Length: 307
Image 1 (cartoon, rainbow, N blue to C red):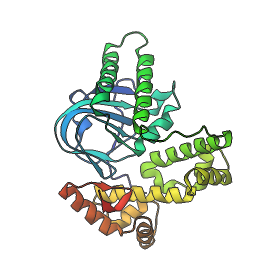
Image 2 (image 1 turned 90 degrees about the vertical axis):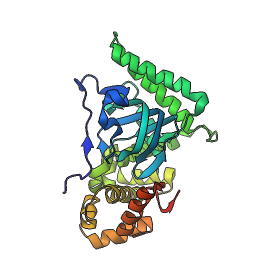
Image 3 (image 1 turned 90 degrees about the horizontal axis):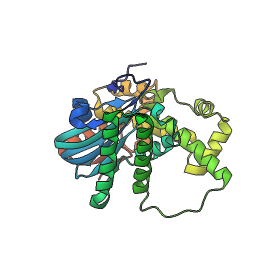
């Protein structure tokens, strides 16, 4: 297996085993908080942008800056900042261990990572700014029990972000117990896919079922009921997504990308990639490179259409 060609950043804070969390301005966190090269994290990142110009690219999709913005980057996602100037705001970094008090927030983060760029608008921005600023003050002040206060603030921020992401969604009736269990299983399965990153080549339906703690048959049934697609189809989608990341952000050959995505036969990988995306690996690379050069939006989930 080749090493991951995309730099992997780990949370670098004092005593991470006690406080796997950090918050600060872009200047306080340091140059890597606005890195202009593609990279991944082993941790979650939330960015609140109050001011700035340029773009934030997440998994090859470019989000132009028109603050205020609230951005979410999940472990394993590839992102970088492009042509940014006068960037101001806060960066919040934490690992899954910091969610011990509110474990349900893991699912919220996965949900938010599906739409990683929220625009709170001028009416909601002051409340969000105040909340994040209070988190920073608590973090820097280190008063007694400050960790539990930070965990509470983070939970509130995620709840408000989810409300914002769902603000246009219609109300639906509560799910029956069996439907809720299927949704819970699907969320856990999707989290495995979202966090796999360079390990996507090792994913299998059997292995994911074992990780979730259910049978392969029940995983198939639950995921198909919720998404309309089988776990195998979603794993192939994750493989294609990882291949897109590597094609767009590295100089690896197509054969090397194929190996990292879980394919020993490059020709079969090319057929797979075309079937999943509608274009060849080489053409996808050319188009994304041209797209970045032309400063247009390219969606990793919509490879045949620029937005």
